[in-house]
Figure 1 (spheres, rainbow, N blue to C red):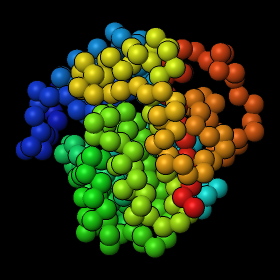
Figure 2: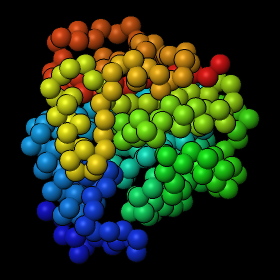
Figure 3: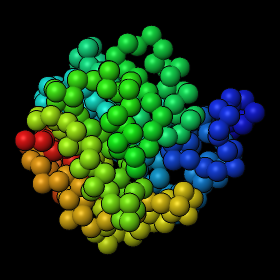
Length: 275
């Protein structure tokens, strides 16, 4: 078990309040979390025993999506919003394994994430991290480090992985996405993973655990998830359950939906291209 006293906390971190990134880290069995986050992870496990498998599914989708964006779509600029704490393979590592010159901007509002990411990226001149929140897209887009690091006249991939479900309907998630994509050039891509609502008990259990511990985390009908992509052209196979989603190999054999384990139907992924 992690000793909280061994973790150096940035001055503006409240150790009594769980955060998305640290709870996710605790679910995955990481060590960069606090007691309050581990307690939240236990709530997730109580609601959905396969919580760790769900987290790994999301991470697998991230890697597959980045590989498609860089290798198949030719993207060499990425903004990863809500990046979370460093884990076994990160966005810049997956991208730069294919294109060493690929540039990645990490964005997170958690000071601990920003601190750890800065340490991880020391010496990597093609990846940076800034502190900002998805609900303030203009702040991300106008941040001086972002503007000087990326060329907005060329295609950019905007990644919102495991985050859009934390934006309430009142906060107008589609408007946030539109603001981000309006700032990018033709040929840019949008990559989202989120939680569908098709009536599965596990979907509702995952949402309940998140709302109980973090105060957010809403499942939405598939039609609502599709609207996040603003009518842009979807890369095959479109919006799909993660175990069935292979954008670089959309024709590969995949299990039928009814063959998936219930927890495998808690998350979907999709990538769309701006005309």
